[in-house]
Amino acid sequence: MEIPADLAPELVPIAWLLGSWEGAGVGGYPTIEAFNFGQRIEFEHFGKPVLAYQSRTWLLDEDGKQVRPLASETGFWRPGPDGTLEVLLSHGSGYAEVWVGEANGAKIELRTDVVARTATAKEYTAGHRLYGLVEGELLWAFDMAAMEEPLQAHVSAQLKRVP
Image (cartoon, rainbow, N blue to C red; front, top):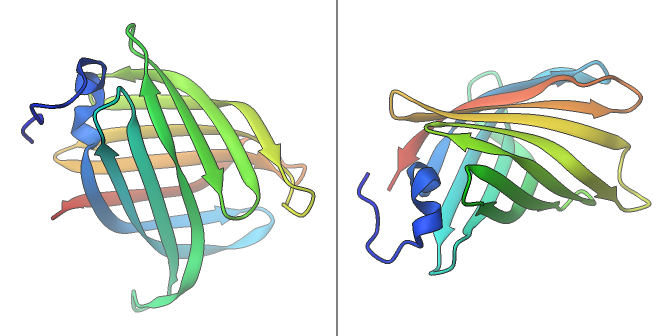
């Protein structure tokens, strides 16, 4: 991927995220049945030292066909000068999160610093996310602590860059 000429210098270490990604993943948790999902993620820049981020997921049936929408999240990824990374996300299901971590080459690791939720949102207390660029694909995993369960695997996906 070619780095855009107007990209803020602070974004160069995470420029590999830029663009649209789509693929499929798996999910599960002790409080729900295992499921397959499709996902589209978009990262874009707009001249500031921050990436705009948007993710949409949908439930897939056994044949890989879309059944219904699942989760959506939107936010901003803000790299620091020393490889640190701050991510702010909001979810249509009633959550707002602040994530902190670091970008190290083609690997990003994040942990929740703050989780806020509305009165009607389900209980969710902490998260851990890994993102990596592996052979040109975006792989990511999300561990979650929720519903009185400890931090454990929840969802993961493998996404390809799309035009």
